[in-house]
Amino acid sequence: MKQRVLFVILLLLVILPLMSVAATLTAQTVQLQQNQSQTTTPVNYDRVAIAISAALAIGIPAIASGLAISSVGSAAISALAEKPETFFRSFLIVALAEALAIYGLILGILLWLKL
Image (tube, rainbow, N blue to C red; front, side, top):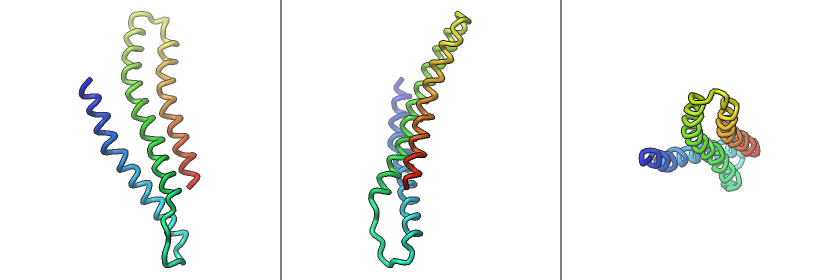
């Protein structure tokens, strides 16, 4: 349990800031290409905020979905080993946990298209 908490904290402190920096640099590059004719280009903080929120919208649900699938999946397999007629219920619960990451991905794509 301590390893899992440490892994989540490490993931939040290392990977998510790197994702947001990459998204910010991408947004600034796109903005510089659009405003190439001007000599001074002000930073559009709305685009930066959307890029960071898109990175967070993909990262956080993916981490939560992974944690949910790890606990629910093992419980579903053990329940299936004891009672084979619980297949549909266990499959449904695991599918709902996977849907969390898919919803985050869709939200991140929609936010990225607003850039």
